Picture 1 (cartoon, rainbow, N blue to C red):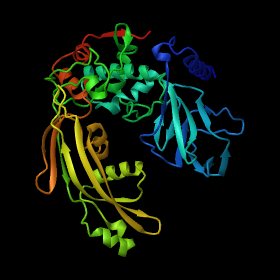
Picture 2 (picture 1 turned 90 degrees about the vertical axis):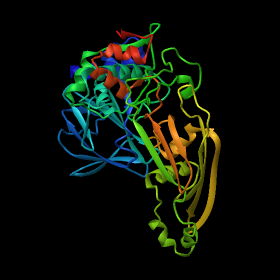
Picture 3 (picture 1 turned 45 degrees about the vertical axis):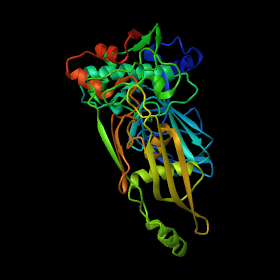
Picture 4 (picture 1 turned 180 degrees about the vertical axis):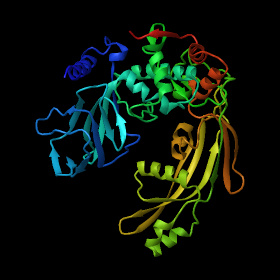
Length: 421
């Protein structure tokens, strides 16, 4: 029980004295979204003994349980039947180092809050030590078999980034919106990198930085001001990166996704709607998600009659604005079908890229664009915003014999590596 109380006390200290807790005692709270998505059911299993802080709810090690949200109420089910849980509940390990919570077969260390989100989804929130959180971040942000010095540089960037978000207004989650977190790590190499840099962070003028990073800057770093606005910060300069492999990408986006006459078919034969498939399935799936956020449900993309990239660029060669027009049809209750069109004219590409998809439209470092013929052809370099450290560039530096300290100094010039203690 001693370890249990130490765990509870450390959580309490983080809440009460967030700036006075040492790095290995800092607690991280991370909402689990990436691997769970939005679901009303999930399976859990425990390794070791856990407390629930509820006298009516006791879970046993090794037993498979199912959590269910039904009509806004949370239930837990095992082989003996289903039991209602009063609101949310928390699982706290009696032994922090030895216990694990499996959610849909993915293991997590530390404590877990299970809450109801939007009255229909189960949303777990994992609470664990910062260093253990990092062990679950590094192998999911980079490849675990990379050179150790690159993994150490990633560990510092991830640790510094996490510390800057511990007491932020937004709850951190496990997606690329913050840092990808995959739960309990068994990757020896990345665990070693975290352990050998324990407590080390990147600072400037004695304060931790935000330590931004992306997969690839395309051979040229970008400033924070160009990427997100605001004043430029000295340790995010615009400069060539000879180590980044550039990561070239290209997109072919068909102008006509579905024949226009399908609009009439949808009116006459409502059952055929589900058989309509656009030419660019992945891109149009992203566009339809965007349309849903604009209030349009059950859509099909007919065409992209206009798509263009402006000639204006930042000093790093990244495009700034663009235009796009989407023509689509949408189905209303009763199988009524309407047609509509949305245009975004000369807007920042930060509004267009999410429509197409960040994993497809990988960066704003566009090297060529052609709208002739039946499709738009776009090519570019890099993957991500390009500010701060290039993860692939860090790996190339490590292969060239550079230390993690040299990597940090190259990508965050003028900063220091300090101890958080």
